[in-house]
Length: 312
Image (cartoon, rainbow, N blue to C red; front, side, top):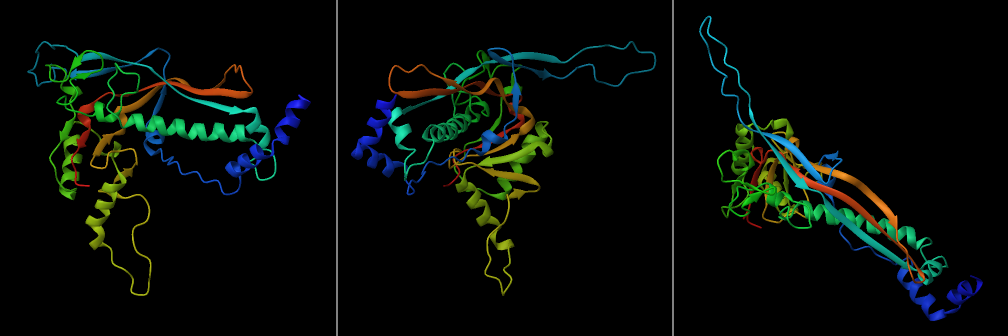
C-alpha cells in the first residue's frame, strides 16, 4: 500500500495532467436540464410490469325511467393494461491513480464522489430523454410520450397487443395535429378544449414544449407588455401560462412539438428506485453503477393532445 501511494505521487507528468483536468478551470458543459422527469408522478410498483385498469365504455343503464319500472343494472367496460418494467443504468469507474492524484494541490479532492454526482446527473438526463422518445414497449427503453400520446397513425400498437384503431380502444387514441404551422393562441386553446371535451380536468392540464416554442409564445404576447418609461427592465418573469395552464419548457422536447398533457393520466411506475451498487474490479480502480427499474405509462391518452411540425 505504501508503494502504491509513493508511486502515484512520484509520477510528475501524470500528476500534472490530472491537476490540469481537475483544477480550478474545470467546466461542466453538459446540459443537465431534466424538467419533465421531475414533474411526472412516481408510483411504487411490486411487479415486473406496470398495470392499470382503464374504462373503455360507459355504463349503458344510465337513463330516465317510469314509476315502478324494474331497475336494470350494468357496469362499465374495463380493460387491464400492462407495460413491462425497463432496466436503466449508468456505470462509473475511476482509477486508483486518479483518486489519489485528485487529492493533491489543484485537484478536486474526492474525485470518486464527484464522478458519482455527475453520473447521477447524466442518469437523470438519460431518463428525461427517454420520456420524450417514441420507444415501443418491446424495446429496452422506456415508453416516452411521443409514443404514448399518439393517434396510432405512426405507432400501430399501444402496450403489447392493443391496436389503437380497433373498436373498444378509443381510450388509447390521443388527438394529434401534424399540420405545419406557426404556434398560435388559437391552436393552444384548441388543444385545451379538445382535452377538456374528452374528459380531462383543466386543473390537471399543462403544456410541455421546447424552449423554441416558449420563445415563440412570448413573442406572441410581447405586445401586451408595456415598459415603464424610466425602467430598463424588459421581458417576462416566472413560468409562462395561458388561461391559467402552465407552459413547461424542456430541452429534450423536439423543437417543433407541443403537448397538452393531463397530469392525472401520466405516471412512472418504479420497481427499484435509483440505487448505487458497487462492482468487483480486477484492476486498480473503484467501480459501481446506478440502476433503476421503471416504466412510463399513460392511462388515458385521449385526454392528451400532441401538436407536431410547429415552425421552428
